[in-house]
Amino acid sequence: MARSPNPPSLSGITGTVVLVGAGKMGGALLEGWLARKLNPKKVVVLEPQPSKAIKALARRGVRINPTGDIGKATAMVIAVKPQIAPDAVPKLAFLAGSKTIVVSIMAGRTIGFLEQALPQAAVVRAMPNTPAAIGRGITVAVGNRKVTPAARRLANALLAATGAVEWIDDETLMDAVTAVSGSGPAYVFLLAETLARAGEAAGLPAKLAATLARATVAGSGELLHRSTFDAATLRQNVTSPGGTTAAALDVLMAKDGLDPLMTKAVAAATRRGKELAG
Image 1 (tube, helix red, strand yellow):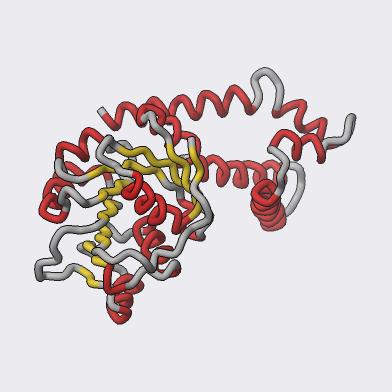
Image 2 (image 1 turned 180 degrees about the vertical axis):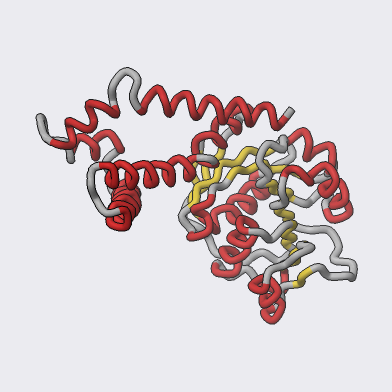
């Protein structure tokens, strides 16, 4: 597994980059590209219901739902909902030539599906997560055999606009990736919810309990992000023997505590991902 370098400038891209679907994730990618100096005039957005923010980018040169011939795309990023993919993706074949790199961020849609719909293109399947909206996401990507080193660098640069990128060689790992990082933000948000409710049950006013839980989860995440220590070491560093934290961890780390529960949750999400992929 290889991690991407710091996000590079995209100013050197000379061909057309087509974004199909400009919802939350597609929009976050687009913002990241423009922030990293991708020429707006090189960007085409295909989105049947563009938001006001997306429409406003037309003033900068972004082409939104153009009616003329735009030729073959250098890169095409597909960010539509996976449910509409069987109808929407084959219609994109006219944009995907033998020199096109197609990057899909559709959950559950396999490389095989993309190859069948877009047979000429090199294909990358990727799974970002929602912190991409603030540039702090992480994406895992896997390419097919047509992805050359140059195509991989281009795909990596486009994906890195919203955070870190990891590459794998085995597509079968993508369901587990989705279960851990794709769905993972929801688990963290649930932690904040349950911590707030537990504080309220212990006697704190509801508003204060929610504020404390939110700030604690957010601050701890930032500490984990900045620290050179792993999560286990950071946990140990704030746990005094026989203290209040240790008393709570005795419950959370019990045989029937958080570890087996999280393992079951990730296994359930992985299993559901396989079911959705067919």
